[in-house]
Image (tube, rainbow, N blue to C red; front, side, top):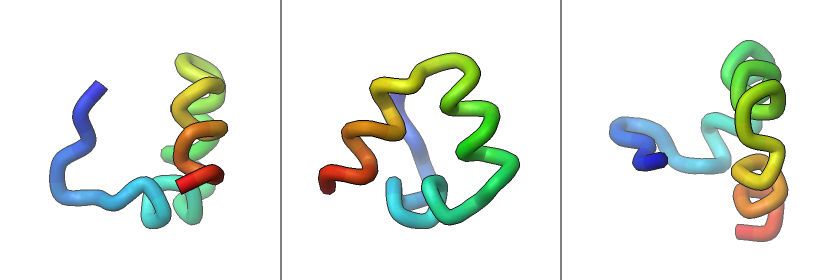
Length: 35
């Protein structure tokens, strides 16, 4: 999954996007928090 126009940090800080990503791909959030 490639995110354009957003950094992982911005996505993690966005509640709606984080909820959507967590629902579909929890590993993405784990990677983003490590970065």
